[in-house]
Length: 328
Image (cartoon, rainbow, N blue to C red):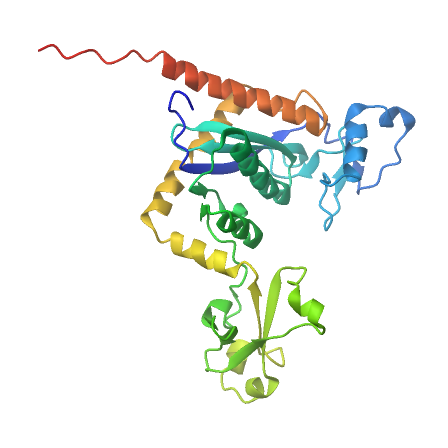
């Protein structure tokens, strides 16, 4: 920051999979292991069992692991690494796109939801440590979830990220984008001009709270659908059409508008600098397989690797000779 290598305007985020120090051949199917006293005495197992009872679990509560490592249970069983299947951790980088300086690093088990959650952690930590808050952040579609976009827009950061949209249908029927949203009346208008009203849960408390899955449901009248000439193109297998709307839909709309801007196109190119850093870490610094076990071990190795990469850039910058004066 003192040398002016950090612009502070645009950040990029991404993750790369690093193989854990855990054999893919010595695994236990499922998510349950009958731990022996000897296994419980090892640091990776102790950390894993303690994390299960903590606020941030190493596993996803909605999806149990398909396999676990008895020596490094926090590592995730994944198909995204250099082997077809292996145990791995994700190296998460948050970089300033000006000179590809790493401003934060985080280790997570190789699960997409954990990688996305790490983005909030790194941005918040960077702001607290260095008073750095980007105007915009670039990432791939994995970071384009409604919750992530809502968090970024809510914190005044423009997402230069493709929107993760599952509302499009490929069976020939109308998609959500074919329905027009009326913000003033809080309703959708179908292609035939009929309205879809939001269906609410009973009770004042239930109405005041957002749904647990973050999706509002808008339903058409069955009578309107039964009489509609477009029913076979809209809801041929249902009595009435339903449209889902995220509670973060305004943030998604804001992001879609940004996708048409020139700045978004520039960010798509500049964010590829983060891939160069991952390649350097794996090829030049030999970070292909971890030497330490457990999430704490992964954090230590990732932090040291990022530090070395930043020091290399600082050294290169410091050895550039000043420009020669122009003689009169």
